[in-house]
Image (cartoon, rainbow, N blue to C red):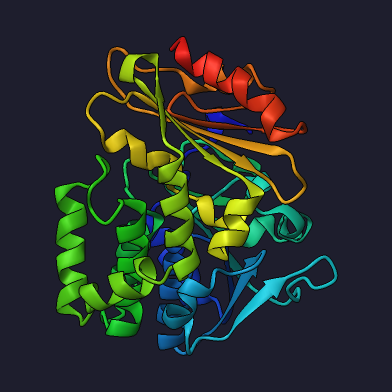
Length: 334
Ligand SMILES: [Mn+2]
């Protein structure tokens, strides 16, 4: 990462000018695209097509099914080791990342196209040498907010097919307008997108309310395992292979479980101890912000893992019953 020089080096109007001058434009984003990655790329591609130009969307890694209804009917391409985009684009736009590590097998292709590539990002860190042109605005809640400005500069009218992906990007990156990155600008933009035809309640249902029943059954078993230690400050949830089988779920269905115990006033730190398919252990740790915040990065390090101060994890190649007492002990001391 070359953090020092990872900042804007052109005006957004210059990117709009490059789009107007181009005829074949590739649009891409980070691996395992999330709502903002999908939203910013799709909206941009649809706006470019509106201008009568060719836009090709290239995604890296598999796509979450939950986004299918937003992506349709736009045709998108998937990068594979044996399948890179063609080399005949006169402009490449990268949204929601500028980090080579997030672009994986596309990086060598991008390096060949660096001189006519532009990053549109809201992250603090990235690789400045990835693209000749950069718009980096960490103050923006979502890359989709910057793309909304770019589309306005292009003079493309805000229609529902463009507004819906933008709303998806902004809503998902702000936790549906709950996180502190939500600003008055965010809400004004969202209001404009609803005026353009976004059915926000329907979109919420399609994106956030599509879990398989097995996940809820697994959550029930996770909550039934609840153990409180450290005088009520720490919560531990334990899931074993038998729990996945009984609930017809998989270890992938545990995402988000570690956040739930933090809804309790006294609980400062939360941990999910999950047995993996191979009989090993995956720890997920979360803590609340504040003056007495528990640094869960330090806790995870005790078990060979790490991450951030408020969210971290570890993968431990030992059986769950060997690992668990040490985790309980560590959390009893927070
Ligand atoms: Mn984002």
